[in-house]
Image (cartoon, rainbow, N blue to C red):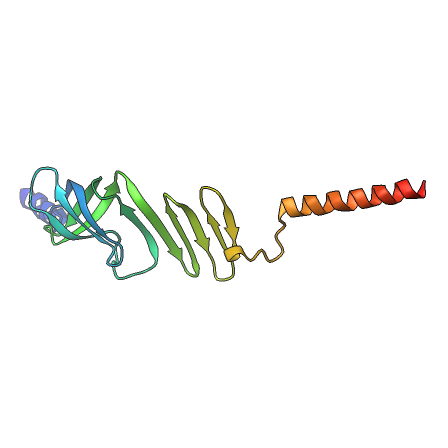
Amino acid sequence: MPDLKNIIRQLAKPDGETVALVCTVDAVDKTARTIDCTPVNEGAPLLGVNLQANQEADFGICVFPEVGSFVVVGFVADGAAGVVLLYDKIESAEIVIGDTSAVIDAEGCRIDTAKMSAHINREDIIFNGGELDGLVIIQKLTDKLNELKDTVNDFIGKYN
């Protein structure tokens, strides 16, 4: 029986140890979707750490940390692959699902679909690149209604 217990323990043992390191971000490569970082334990710098599972993809969720911020880097299969697991401060985040994308950064939020867009910044909301396509500009509508009201009141005054 003790042999069976050891056999089960050996079968259940994972292939490699999973390790996580806290690091500071040295550089961000948005094209490659990787970062270079240095462990806070003063270990060797880590180069080309993945920000998403498939770094060659231009879809999915990708969070870009700020240079100088802290990240947690996880390693699987004896350190053969590293991926950022957690973020301290982020510079931007991108979500791409099919023809729909959303980018959020300090400048605002940009949402684009196959047929329309909405870009929100600190001062404006811009729909469809400024082409309103049926959306109402409230101030212009209010001015026109006030002009029509004045004209109608003028007609009523002259009639009376």
